[in-house]
Image: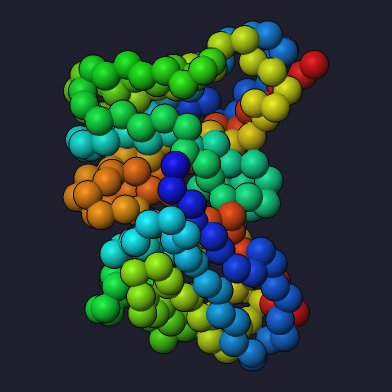
Amino acid sequence: GAVVSQHPSWVICKSGTSVKIECRSLDFQATTMFWYRQFPKQSLMLMATSNEGSKATYEQGVEKDKFLINHASLTLSTLTVTSAHPEDSSFYICSAREPGQLEAFFGQGTRLTVV
Amino acid sequence: GQQLNQSPQSMFIQEGEDVSMNCTSSSIFNTWLWYKQEPGEGPVLLIALYKAGELTSNGRLTAQFGITRKDSFLNISASIPSDVGIYFCAGHRVLEYIFGTGTRLKVLA
């Protein structure tokens, strides 16, 4: 299957700072990428859909100014958690889909801890 | 956000036993996907189903796309310790993927 790489795998940051998470499709071009948040022992909750060259579509209840998404190229989408607070600590996962294909492939996830 | 109903929520089984889990929805999906997630990792795609009634196997895994397009099930035969993890179903329509609540599987050697 297609390979999606997420970086970093984990990050610890101080409250009030911003953190950027990268999601790359390594062997295909992805016009659409998805960002999820996962709390312990829970399922994946879609935060936003990232479209190359246009603004991301955010799910209801997700603050777009808090979670900045940039999909500047066909192989890279970034999620920036701005002014992070301890309640932003979570597991963030991206996924990407090849144009014309139905399967979504996931990155390995980023464990964010805000102290 | 919306989630699909997945059952059972968790399972403890003996090595060698077969496992069955299912996913149900109140609405129709065009594609069903099954993923496995291990601790600290992203989900890995196991099986994709594209049309109603389809039965697809991947090694010891077998999944079916329900005829009503509102459900799917996943079977694992002859379970082994490395089958441990959380299994998620996902329904897809247009650009939307909706995930199930997950089935946590533990295999006792």
